[in-house]
Image (cartoon, protein in one colour):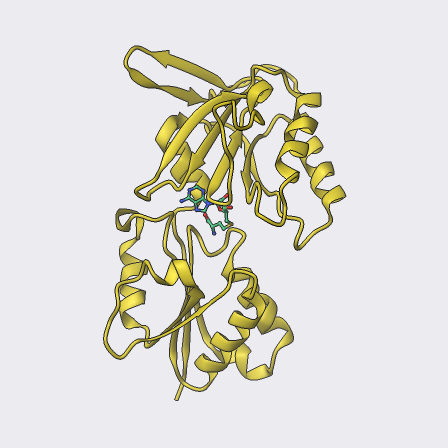
Length: 259
Ligand code: SAH
């Protein structure tokens, strides 16, 4: 019996963001693994086993899913957004590289999804219209000083920066610290976009500036685990429109030598 393991991106939330390929692969699976809230987005089908786990248990979940596939199962591992962006596809590869030889013989497919930064960018215009990078602010898997170096380098190099995992209950101070560092490199007027729970009923997208980005309760912006933050460059612009939300965009050309 030969098993199959599909690592599936569900997109940011709403079913309209689920690709046809992902929907097909979900139907074909006879066992689903993933972080509980992500599994809850997948319609229940009879005879389909569900194995929810906590979001800190990625390595264990990957190992379990691989064992299940190696025993002949048609297994799906689900991720929010894209499974290759700070998510399960790399966790699966890590386990395959260090695991039993049989895991290398498995039919493994990675099915892409719309990642949070693309969903947020599309809601507000084109902030990622020129060169950009993505950075996770979580220091669970890398040391904080490395994150600081990357933030400084990205801002100096003139990249728009998409910040994933800006805060969590266990990491309350990192976001404010990151904003402070970016202020050393970029002007206070630099546009900053906060996209929260995009594609879900409580979706909220707000535009602010680097100067005001860490304003808390009295200010306008609150950041949490479901928020993706896009920090612009010196080139990023906000177009104010009467009676309509602003458009934030980064022009396709840049004249300034930013390094
Ligand atoms: N694989 C996911 C990212 C996982 S990291 C993807 O490709 O989108 C988790 C972080 O992604 C969150 O802390 C948040 O920064 C961001 N995120 C995930 N879903 C989101 C959504 N619907 N709206 C805004 N940000 C989201």
